[in-house]
Image 1: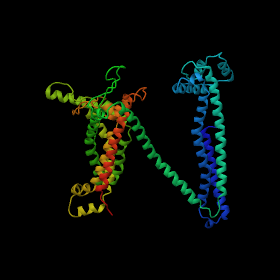
Image 2: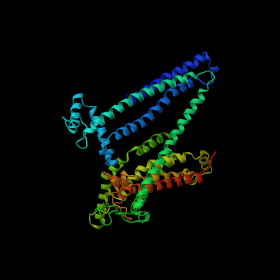
Image 3: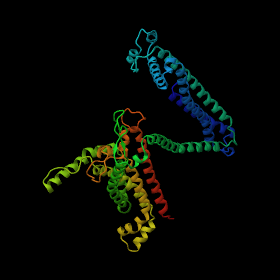
Image 4: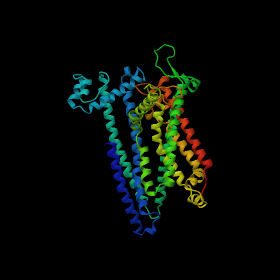
Length: 494
């Protein structure tokens, strides 16, 4: 029985258990709700939880433990000649056995017998059924594959029987507890509280796992490359030199990548902050309710556009436009029709990234400005100030801490952008201040170093984790500082 079908049956059992528990509570109370400690819906939910939750836990545990046990058993049954070649050879053989097992399920009895006796080529027979096998295949693989299929089949049937038995037994046990004074609401709320704790813990545990994995791999990188060379190096050249030659590990200077990251983010913020902030002020203070209800959703549509689309826009439209404009300006001024703005440049990436960031700035700033109490506006206008003077001298100072925090959060979003930079700014790792020339960022090099069929054993691939943890620290510091600014200077209004 497949897992999806098993989950559907468990859901149906839970559905039936809910109505059974609800009906039993009404029968116990003689349809007098006043005699029940909890409403009938809570009793039904308690019985449904008793039927579903233990069964799902057993199913999850079985799906985790069963493949480990089957793999271990099949691995131990492999010939000694294979096991004597090391773990890598054993893993490769086990993968081939699984491929053969998949192929055997597609063969009829005659074909299986032909493969077992050697009268048919194993690799060609499986290829005809759409199963690719690395190598020619060995005779022992067929027996191991049959053992694998048999154990997996038994495991499936045992799992189905155990899960359904637990579901029915859990529902029957729960329905026996339904009485007029049973605190079903407390039990249901306790389960819901546990579910909320688990859900909230997933994000925390995921973050801890990401940090732990990056730190462990970054530690391996720093065991090969000096941290001083990485953090203070000015040359990025992680070349793959020939084995035995000097400088085979290349140069891993972070400063060119960090400079490009901050430079492009700075240009993007220069473009996004004025437009986004002015848009927020207009929508919050000047626009009519009807215009605001139309303009704000249209502006926030920009936030839903995939970043790869922004990258195409930069590559096809903005970059060539800036290049052609620079060519015409240079020709009018000097007579030399040669462009001084490259199609891939810091300016191109900054402008397009700024367009992407406009809805972040405007939406966050608009929410903060609208939270300023109406009494401050009315008081300023009542004293004779104009609307623009009220905005400049009352509303913006009151909302400034929140706006600064919003801008810092937007900056952390800009620092982590990848696709726009790949297509709009190029991949050249250099230290320069000319916004008309290409540069690259940390995120682009992370993608570049992890592209291809590589193993995480050389500094050329492990450097991606060092770059990742560096970028994580930068964005974390920006977020912490934004929260600090907001909390320190936040105004408390009644």
